[in-house]
Image (tube, rainbow, N blue to C red; front, side, top):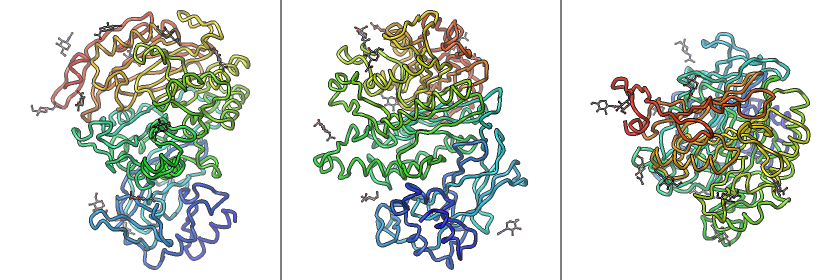
Length: 626
Ligand SMILES: *[C@@H]1O[C@H](CO)[C@@H](O)[C@H](O)[C@H]1NC(C)=O
Ligand SMILES: *[C@@H]1O[C@H](CO)[C@@H](O)[C@H](O)[C@H]1NC(C)=O
Ligand SMILES: *[C@@H]1O[C@H](CO)[C@@H](O)[C@H](O)[C@H]1NC(C)=O
Ligand SMILES: *[C@@H]1O[C@H](CO)[C@@H](O)[C@H](O)[C@H]1NC(C)=O
Ligand SMILES: *[C@@H]1O[C@H](CO)[C@@H](O)[C@H](O)[C@H]1NC(C)=O
Ligand SMILES: *[C@@H]1O[C@H](CO)[C@@H](O)[C@H](O)[C@H]1NC(C)=O
Ligand SMILES: *[C@@H]1O[C@H](CO)[C@@H](O)[C@H](O)[C@H]1NC(C)=O
Ligand SMILES: *[C@@H]1O[C@H](CO)[C@@H](O)[C@H](O)[C@H]1NC(C)=O
Ligand SMILES: *[C@@H]1O[C@H](CO)[C@@H](O)[C@H](O)[C@H]1NC(C)=O
Ligand SMILES: *[C@@H]1O[C@H](CO)[C@@H](O)[C@H](O)[C@H]1NC(C)=O
Ligand SMILES: *[C@@H]1O[C@H](CO)[C@@H](O)[C@H](O)[C@H]1NC(C)=O
């Protein structure tokens, strides 16, 4: 039965309020409704004659928008009778039970569904409405609402709001922005790039700063948007009042929903979702640590693992995570038949093709799982290894070629893990000097990518990466295969900007001192030819400003994340000129505020901050304890 027919069926008698326009009912598979949520069953147990009293319903987690196209964008909210998440993983005879934590019993929810109206307008007062609709949500999809606003104009700002049908119970007002038409010649686009936000390690101040500055058009998130760990296992949530729920390593659908919901109470994260359209992809922790095609660090795809590691199978856990992710994130499912597909691309005018990869969960060959590091090192140069799987790889190479052919100025590749070769032998011990969980563990996949760029002479490539909790800025060199001059940048085919974490701790020690961090950065820039700037000390993010002439990257460091504050330090700025395929010399203008700059200077000036108790002019060290 096709969807169109389905939606026709279910709108009869429910007057223009739609189930299927809430995209979350359509996951995971549009063409195989039996694999997804049975809308038949949902409709059956909902009695439209006893609707919710609008005053019993709440917009519990703000609003969000994402995956902008020239004429449409995804809008998201959550509205329900409770902020508690649904445990419909326990669905019994058509009922979606809700866990009541006071009585510790499952309650059958059989009321009418929640009816929500939405509108998108060109003005804040929502007078000039360009698209609107009416959809249902219910416990089956954790009371989430995801709709596509259409009829929009390219590269235009819009405002949107939801309300409970026939009531003045409204959501906050959201703001969003479409992308330009593929052939539009636009002069500037700003993107804030984030990764690795770990709730028990600190406040998400980094998300809030671009909101306060109103500095960018879009937000890109490279993954590790949330973490699966139990608080005590990783983090100091207790000491800062940020224990993520449920307080256990998450495995069930309920767990994943609840964990994302906890993260989405951080006011800076909520503010970023409310003000900017997001384009996120997942890394490993959205499912679990070091995931690959058939397992993860703490779960093997074996009976033994099932029995001893939580009573859950790898596939079931992945499915739970992915379903909760799609319910809660304001993104499109570009291929309804392929629930695991998050890799997708965006044409931002003639200026940029933004290619978002999944180097983790889709079809990745075995990775470093801690007990097999030597083995993965040994096979890291095997021709058959892939980070993406053959299907995604061919799509990726085709995207790169097509992008060059259509004449897009820049290709920006959103990767989770670092692409450049990074020798960290001082930290890791010489036997395994590289990070085999990053592109270095999949040399064949990396070579195929570089080979295509060099052979087809595809330039202006900007790789982005997160995952590492540190900042790494490199020329994109094919070491050992193509000549590369680290001083001039000659021989490089692009640039890689890898960003630090929103809050996740420094990989060289959670509470490392500034001096020790900068010292280690010096060693790293010296040991790695193509690595031009490195910083370990600061949590933060970076912003990209893209024009036809150049891409500028501005790195920001946050002095402390254990308090909620808006402080940030401009750490370093970089320019990549169109056609040059390398960092402009002198790299970073020759001066940075932190870390180590190859051939440049480190000058740590005092920084001005407003602490709420007056303005202070203090050193980097003193900032961290203010
Ligand atoms: C709705 O939110 C308000 C304010 O946070 C709260 O006081 C009220 O209890 C909530 N109602 C429900 C049904 O959750
Ligand atoms: C919403 O508020 C307006 C203005 O206060 C009022 O006129 C209208 O009746 C309200 N609508 C509903 C459905 O309560
Ligand atoms: C469903 O979620 C609840 C709440 O977390 C959990 O106790 C239960 O084990 C889960 N059941 C299954 C089958 O995953
Ligand atoms: C997974 O299998 C490996 C190899 O047999 C073993 O060393 C490791 O402890 C297992 N991990 C789990 C979580 O079961
Ligand atoms: C990494 O650096 C160490 C020490 O500088 C060196 O001995 C080793 O050969 C390097 N390994 C690689 C793969 O570059
Ligand atoms: C990839 O290229 C490197 C040179 O950078 C080379 O040493 C390695 O053997 C190549 N591996 C594969 C599988 O192509
Ligand atoms: C590191 O800093 C955090 C936050 O201030 C603190 O809770 C934790 O105890 C510190 N850890 C160590 C080992 O000093
Ligand atoms: C800096 O690194 C060197 C080794 O490269 C080490 O000997 C020294 O103790 C380090 N200094 C600090 C302050 O960490
Ligand atoms: C980066 O550029 C901004 C201007 O956009 C400037 O204010 C800031 O000082 C620069 N930062 C560094 C470290 O040079
Ligand atoms: C501001 O000053 C008050 C009183 O001295 C102090 O309790 C508070 O911690 C200070 N706040 C900040 C952010 O420094
Ligand atoms: C920088 O700040 C420190 C306190 O953090 C202060 O002792 C020092 O005098 C300041 N330097 C300048 C040049 O103001």
